[in-house]
Length: 284
Ligand code: SER
Image (cartoon, rainbow, N blue to C red; front, side):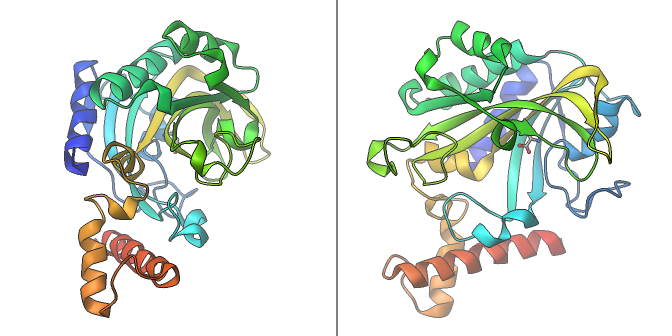
């Protein structure tokens, strides 16, 4: 499945679940002084979550162009990009955890055909409700890992805004990539790759970091297009997927270096490919 097919499949799946397809907004957020760049799919929907605006439908789905300057130092590894596309389904006070979890599982297993044995789930520390829904759809208790605020509480995007506990789906590249007996989905060693984050957006965080309940409970999910393409195309890195391979080839032509010959040069070529692509989208 190509990256383009994955993007389309995702949007069709959620249209079939009653979602309205929404175009990606600009990388420059409109009317949002808290953010320099659009960093997540939920950014254009923030006024819907806070109740300041009425959405065109309580169920929305998009493929959002995102830019994360926070990850710039990691570019060149197999986990982080500055520019990426985020697939997302959103509930504005409509469905909540149960549906978000069961639809994510259905899409990953039945539409993407990722084997269940390769997947792990993380949940927020005390989120027994999310744990129960994952168990109900057949995830075993050993595959559900509880993590704290750093890993499993998302947002706000910027200083203030909607946020909430989250639950993530991680792909396991196998024990041969493990850094040791304590390796788990929250580990950065490269054995695991988070492909989808389901945020249960219940709170508004103000400038004093005080959290108050939003008018309604919402869903904000984000599936990384490039990460998921890596997994379903059986690759180990973004740069080997159809979304990046042509750019790497072009860097190779221009520099006269063969990708795969030398790790230091390979990393440099990945950085050039990533930044080249990112800058094109920023300019556009
Ligand atoms: N906003 C969440 C994220 O960026 C889920 O879409 O991970």
